[in-house]
Length: 66
Image (cartoon, rainbow, N blue to C red):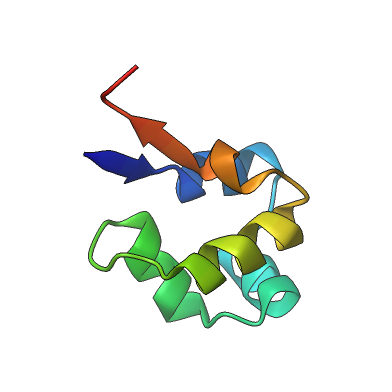
């Protein structure tokens, strides 16, 4: 199972949901649903979020398999 670490990375960069929404072009409610695990993000969304946060896309993942 892979966990998306959006909340952790967003707050580490001190972005609000609204700021990330504006920077990424992804709606605030969609970002909120991704953070809360209600929906799985698409690869395109993950790439867009990573670019907006200025991080590698792989930093958005945590896997139980090491």
